[in-house]
Image (cartoon, rainbow over all chains, first blue to last red; front, top):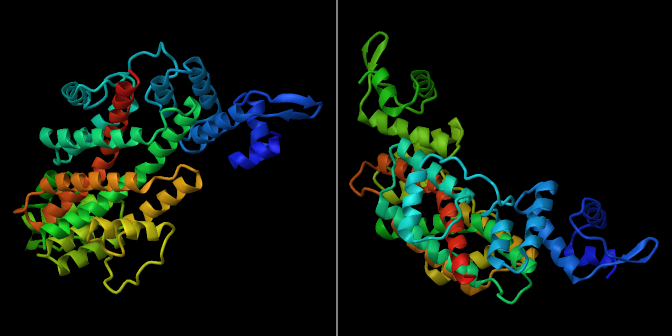
Amino acid sequence: MRISELSRRSAVPTATIKYYLREGLLPPGRATAATQAEYDEGHLRRLRLVRALIGVRGLSVSATREVLGAVVEHAGERHQVLGLVLGARPVDEDAQEPEPAPGAAEVDALIGALGWEVSEHAPARAVLGETLETLRSLGAELDPAALRGYAELAERTAVLDLDQLDPDADPLEQAERALLRTVLLEPALLALRRLAQENESARRNA
Amino acid sequence: MRISELSRRSAVPTATIKYYLREGLLPPGRATAATQAEYDEGHLRRLRLVRALIGVRGLSVSATREVLGAVVEHAGERHQVLGLVLGARPVDEDAQEPEPAPGAAEVDALIGALGWEVSEHAPARAVLGETLETLRSLGAELDPAALRGYAELAERTAVLDLDQLDPDADPLEQAERALLRTVLLEPALLALRRLAQENESARRNA
């Protein structure tokens, strides 16, 4: 396809596609004339992933280039590709283990008790630990059974999330979908909790 | 107690407490001398709620004053107090029904199918509708069964949330706890989902 069709099918403006080509986020098309090139479905999938990494995950162009490089290196290993695209796994394999963050011991204990297989580098570990510490500092500490309950509901949410991926899809396409649904669903899941709380409160105080 | 002890027990600086007194967010203490006043447990509970409304929910001083006024009017009706403090219920009872937002029909259908009792004014309705529309516009539409699945997990999350409230606590204290745990747990719940996704992805691609 020509660049105009690539633009139409991806909803990314032609000028932006040309910028991504110059920055090496997209490989060049097959030259068909001095000023024309042909692009294929692989370009489209990669372009959609680039748009999701920049527009939804909020990565810079250079961070996106690094993630794409690592994705290409691990193409075929779906778990690694998902981890890279979602930021659960560092791009640099030799990255040092992060410094223990506040609440890290509690998070480690929870993950151990659940038997979860999670990278030491997952940024969500620190987010969880810091939240638990903040609640404690405000005297609104979560008891361990409640934390375990929330974690078990998260397990079921993750099963729903993964069930929606097409296992036969191209790995880049699968990664783009996973990124869109993971990040964009976040406000919706919190909104559902707020609505369900209101309903549950109405029920209990009827 | 003197203002210094109120400050120590609430971890709110004395100057801030004096500002809240001037702004009418706290009722005056009982004057014991020309420049001294005594405060009680009621002041402490109200001060903690003010701190949570401003510091955690991010309300302005004037919005906090309105919420407190409505809370006092509905004291004793725990469901109403929770709704006011969490923003699920408008302070102005005569507020017009909001304009239908994008995705409102889908949200109404979901809430109807689940039989949830939720105010027409709940801001979470619009957040949910907008997210569903965004996913659709990006070609990553959620199928209705999946949406229903997420909503059912939200119901169980809300049961856990409400189970942690002390039903015998003072209503202001209960409302403060509910606000802290609802808002501050949000990043932790999303972090648990990310960690659970990584584990589920590892399991499926092992």
